[in-house]
Image (cartoon, rainbow, N blue to C red; front, side):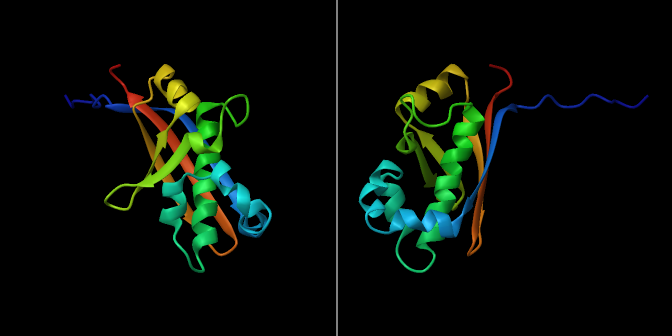
Length: 140
């Protein structure tokens, strides 16, 4: 008789969000007068990590897509006490993107017993896309 037992997954998905950003539309945030309000969308660390140069807009658009995808995974959206800077996109030493949540969204993450995030982001010269999966330990 063959053993058909499957291993119990350690983590399970509890939310998923996807977002697509048009780079040309997004680039308006990087021009005056909107440029003065970038700190309402991005933390200082995110702006520094995006660097300068020709791909800065694409990198920021990717981070913006991650923020939107996280809010979708949590079922919140922005407003009503939720700010874009409540989602901070960071890169691990490996270069893999992940998120840190602050304020209202950190509380929501705790309430949902979310223990981690699977984040994927990509961009071309015209589009940025992000997929975010909220996970929690299956034994919690």
